[in-house]
Every structure is written in structure tokens, then in C-alpha cells.
Image (cartoon, rainbow, N blue to C red; front, side, top):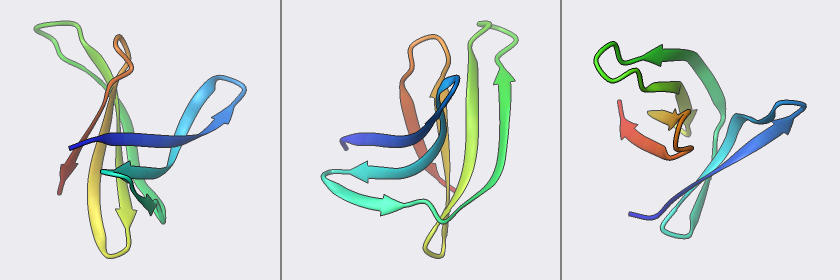
Length: 75
């Protein structure tokens, strides 16, 4: 699966996801339901997590703060 996330860019750079592209198909994010920043206590890896509503589905997007890699999971 090829994933690309399009974000609103504010004064801090990439901030809020607005759309995702999966295998060349674009899906608009209707609403950010929840967001948080978490840190894995074992590895120290930090990531931003967004629970997003796309149509009638809830997806979980996470972005590694060290690598910048985005991951997606259906909720």
C-alpha cells in the first residue's frame, strides 16, 4: 500500500492532516476527532496520533517524529 498524507502547513510546518492518498486515490478528512502525542517508554520513540473521520469510517493516522513516516490503521 502506498500512503501519502496531505497536511495543512502552518507556521510550524506540517501540522494537521487534511487528506490521505492511498494507491493514487485521494480521501478528504472530514474531521479530526482526537489528537495526541505519545512516547514509547521502551524506545523513546515519539509520535503524533490523529483519529480522523473519512466519510463514515474512523481511521488512526500516526506520524513518527523522528523519521517523519506516516502509518494508517482502521479503527
